[in-house]
Image (cartoon, rainbow, N blue to C red; front, side):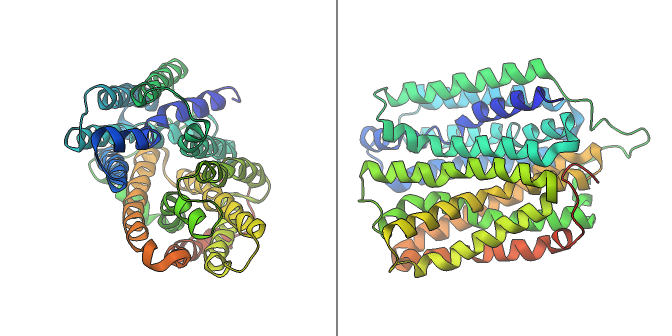
Length: 394
């Protein structure tokens, strides 16, 4: 059962490279299309909105559990590659670009949540650690555009984006060949799947606690990732427009990949709930301390940002593991899709407020993010106060 997990993790990374492909071409798009930096945010939010609509459709219709997860993943990865390729080859302005980026996000709704379901279908007994590997790779993928910019790759922006499409096609082939795992089979005598049945998951106390923890976590995470370049400049750790911004942003986001893997290892010993609670507490502490760090030395301010980058995402895979274990197997895919849908809707609000208010609030914008991990910790309380239980056991 060990071999399928690396296949899924790598395929998930390749497939979700579509997510931030446009961001890697931001400078070229601003120059070639005559747009402004805020329009790059619009392209990013178009992907977010498409993902929200897609996950809502998968969740409410039950499609995520009616068909094999591997087939849904493969079809959506191929369609996402097509939309992404059309963005590179056809789009000439925001009017043509936004619908295509929306299409990419819609297709990613069949890649990210279904990839999580595939992990659980192959290794339910170690879902916390396996999902930690998956989210760790996704975090590294999020940091990658900053790394590419730092390296100064000389390709055209169209070629860079088409590479993401090629990677997504490879991901589709990998998952289609792998297929679904032997677990999460539909139980004999289970109620028939029907429209909206997924909402019953919120009647399960363990799922509800995990979902509330996840929603608080999502208020902070994507807004933090979006604001990192600005925070680096505000704290004088990097000069505006310098390669330092990209290099340090890559480090602050990318360190989350290591913390996810470390959290997965730890979850096998203390349980996913306690790993998630620890990460939320650390993240809340960083939110609270960051605006007060102006008088610290540069090394200490950077260390605080790196700790924040590690803590902000380390809990993410464990919410998925906890939610998957709490649900009946026949609605796991739909439940994870719905949880993602609500979580990403929350990110859009936090990103909008954070980017709109950061000029006025300065480093104090971190306090806008603070309620997320605090409320997440409160929502998760019924699970992390319980006796320690290894991640894979009920």
